[in-house]
Picture 1: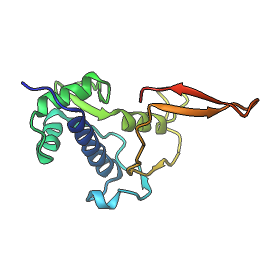
Picture 2: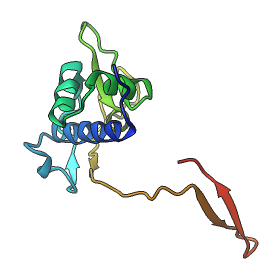
Picture 3: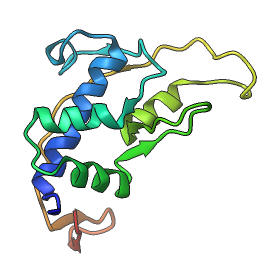
Length: 149
């Protein structure tokens, strides 16, 4: 079995995020959620291993198992601990965080507070800088700081 390339991991992860956004928002397609405000309609959302494989296969990932396992190992996919099921269920880290943050309660046994969580999913290009220049507030001199991004 071959290892999964960084490009494939990125492509698969972005496909998973788009798929989750459609499901969480109750939308019919990606075009209904990309770049548009979206409310959480399905807070109990999760993906099965089969669904992850279907997403990987739909975008032409050569080694779906290797890529999915790599995303799980690296913490990009969170395994959910749900009661009374043998089926493995997952969420992406950002959507797991979002759904937990929107589920506000005084205590676990109390009712959920009435809140509305709106999010937008889109692509943001981040330059691959290895060195960032920071200005000091007490001086006009720049501090060169190495960063591994």
